[in-house]
Image (spheres, rainbow, N blue to C red):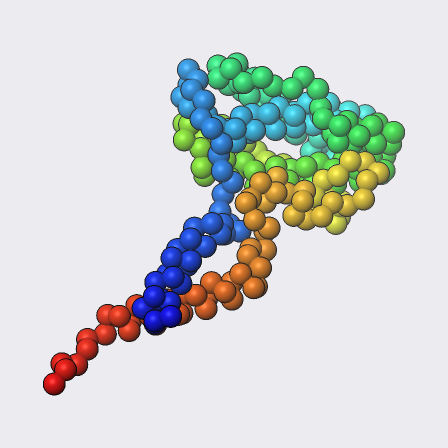
Amino acid sequence: MSAKRFAAILLVLHLLVLPGVARADDPPAPGPVEQTPLGPITALDKELLIKVRLAGLWEMPMGEEAQTRAGSTRVKEVGAQLASDHTFLDERVVRLASQMGVTLPDEANADQQSWMAEMRSRTGAAFDDSFANRLRAAHGSLFPVIGTIRATTRNEAIRQFAQVCNQIVLKHMTLLESTNMVTDVGLSKPVAAGAAPAAAVGADPVRASARIPVDGPSPLVVLLMCLAGAVVTIGILRLLRPRGHVK
């Protein structure tokens, strides 16, 4: 096979392979677009509304119950602030979802119900530990989701709502950390009460929706891409190199 033909084949393979490899930091695909009275929304936009609604369904009651169950004055203060903020967010998300025709859940999911059951079985220091860590883990998981939607949405109403949510979730993480009770459990991915800790990648809603593992392409794929790129570059340079006049 001639050098020109070999270089051409490698160039075609190189161009076919590269577009199909998604980077680990690529945002998840937004999904199909739906039209609403407030503009177009995607599945990711609806995910924000649903997740914020779910958060309020368990954080509001647990913030209120912290006033009688908590042993720490600081946990009671943090609980009151979280309950107040999620009441505000819940009113906004219900109104926004209604305007956009998005159906919201009416009860907390299974994991959240397990956290509530755990907290309701405890008082004093045991409640404080569960409250600080369960809520910190949940907020830490939601924070990158909101950031991704804030950065990628094409809907102005969703963007403004995500902005508010981003600020409040960051505020709540800071408040929970101010209790000085957050441990590795609170800094890990949230799991149902009594379950083993989740793997870091599998539990991350943003990374789990990526098109490839979070660590990126395998070393073999990277090596083959580099070799193909080098050969293609050399081949193109040889083809473009001025030739001497034949005497």
